Length: 354
Image (cartoon, rainbow, N blue to C red; front, side, top):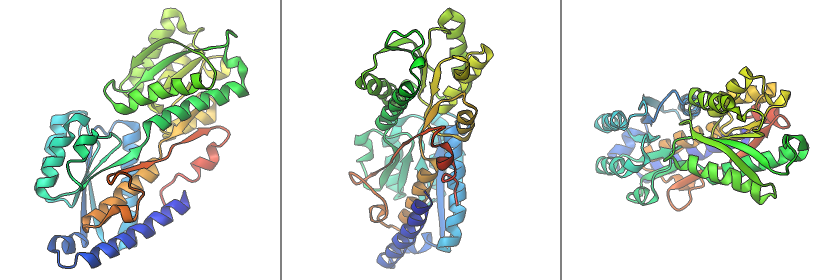
């Protein structure tokens, strides 16, 4: 991870140098490399992963100021899960002539509107975490997406459950040769929720273990909603039947753990195996205490570095593909990895910004 960070810093500096040399006659580019103004429009800042990602972007922007010798102004706007509010925030960034706008959309179906506004103002836009519809992103060659492959995260989550079952066959508490599970899903229309749900289960069944779904519910990525849903399932008599809790993210997994703890049904006490996705710090703590079996690392550090780094290059009219693994001209997808107690500390020690 530290090598990755040093490499990114070098690539950003190289990319900016090439951009400056290639655009010396461009007045906007000459000005933008003195002070880089980056607007961040987040869908909601009380989302644990998005909050962590934005914190990392702020830290990385400060680090890049000294490395690049440029002033970086990074402004984060909380959309409060309201597309109308976010639209006003994007308009504000455009009206103030920010160099680059980065958007974590409330509603991914409005990408075309945002791209059209950004294109008319000639302000590059980087979407992150919530992937726009492909046809919308392709409207303009200065629109990009930075994120991960949701299908991969689901597949790895399923593999983690298979690995756990091999280590501890008693996870199949009733010994019927299949896993009874409940699924905590994110927003119904979110592509990450749909793909993580599908491929986590598919990965397990493809691995030769049948699955029986006892219940599923959308908890909209939120811990309190997940805790409430889990409590309802436990109160309905499912408590002793649930063998695995699969959660589309860590925050919902932590909510499920809160409900299980109240019933003395944590994994260590013979309760269900609980798995999440994101590797937020509270989830890592839960792995340490044994209440969460594992998570899939959705690398907030690397994503933050990539978003800020690409924004710096784009502010000087540079080409991010010279410094980043851009696929299909507009996409940067960073890999996931499995984190359990077996490899937790090695992953945690390499995840800090700096």
